[in-house]
Image 1 (cartoon, rainbow, N blue to C red):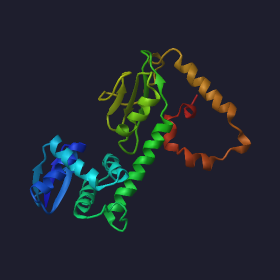
Image 2 (cartoon, rainbow, N blue to C red):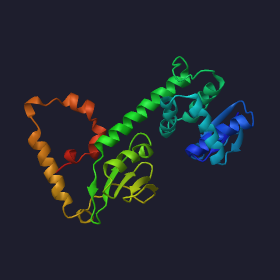
Image 3 (cartoon, one colour):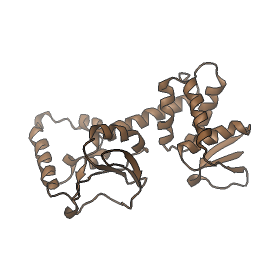
Image 4 (cartoon, helix red, strand yellow):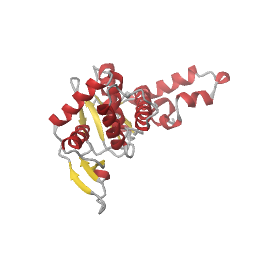
Length: 251
């Protein structure tokens, strides 16, 4: 067994795929540095991320797959599922060894896995876009924190840039310790020392508490108790997302 150890980045993974073919390797497993445990039963090869190699792999895949099939690969990588690198490698090997695109061949385990995981990540992306609530801080910055099941920040950046183009905002992933920051021009990744959501009133804009109160009052006023359907509500807004919603926070 040869372990291809990469830096955990998307381009790093694609470089590992390139080197799998470049060195004509056979029995291979691809692992990120943070999860790799040295073994006496295999050989370790460190993969140095090479943008040119990664680009060549991606260019070849884009020609072999439909736009929908190609578009699933990066979200699947962001799922951070255990062993997902090997699943992606197996899928890519199948793509390159087939005359026709195998993306609809659901009888194949790796094809089914890629499709299933892509749908899971897409669902989480959609929910983050729907459930994120910003809080305005004293300096005018709009801040929101999340801790999603999957690393969806790269997937939601475009949505929030388009929707809140006239506001400076920061969405921070507490679980992965990084965020995306929009400065009215570009969105960039940032790393900050944030362990939990801001709670002290002094850090909020003077109008923020009023806005939150008005928002909660609005939801109370439109709530029709006789028509309340808790099961349906939880199906559409699972409880694990309530911590993001201003209207669900305690008074």
